[in-house]
Length: 379
Image 1 (tube, rainbow, N blue to C red):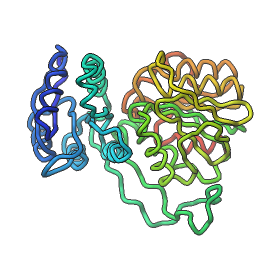
Image 2 (image 1 turned 45 degrees about the vertical axis):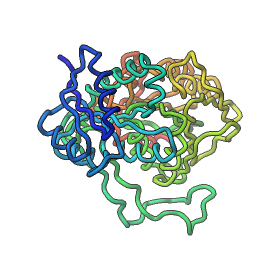
Image 3 (image 1 turned 90 degrees about the vertical axis):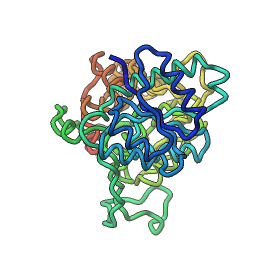
């Protein structure tokens, strides 16, 4: 059965081009188009598409507002188009918070220069997110940040107490229906261990998932953290800045020579590879064109296995494909522990499923439980 797609963009050229690309796939059917967010909501309710492609900047109603309304009234997987700029990254992260599943750069030059590559990427994204859990149940929008003090036992390293936020972390949008995740089977609570490193890998659905996990960690979290999120180079700095503002721990985009330390999460820069060594230093290497993912979870996990033996706790969150499986295999061989996010709370159950099917998971947890269990395991 063909995947039904609604194309939303105020540019007639881009609507036509996206429609042509998607219609070239016999398993995709463009059932309608819209020129602004208001039309998008109306068409989504009338046509009930399987996937919506959405521009951000449009007249009458922008894409983010439209996504919020669609998630409340008829939850549908949304693929956002975004510009490869810092502002474009910020807007895209807002769209993901609002409920969008994934995004693609809106690059007219690529469409002209590499039409086959663009076709393959766009059609693969549409097919993948059509199977997203976002189609099930209702979507809970982020709540405002409450004014109640957070139970922080220590200030963020290097941050004066007076400058530290006293607000509790913002509850973020759920990446799956509450009814589904609340009934998901879960592994027993973890046993405490002196981990030297926590490594978290993710892809589609990862930005919101990482926010949910990391905002549960206290400022005095005792283990260094490395984060590997499949994301373009222009996006990772903005994403690290967002996480740093939301979390009690510190978060920054990793740079070559950075030192791992407790209470600090280093995010792998887009377009490059991140490795760690036994001295606690981070190495940032150029992205290898032979690798599909830049950054690649397998690369970082593999270096952690070599450097830290059985002292790593690796977590694989929502995402397409199987990146992280081979790195997790190396970690497992060295005696380290691997956790996977459960199917019910994943946006896309690909990467965690690869871990579970390879019998590499020591525990399988719902997204809402992972942050709490990290604290139990490491403190």
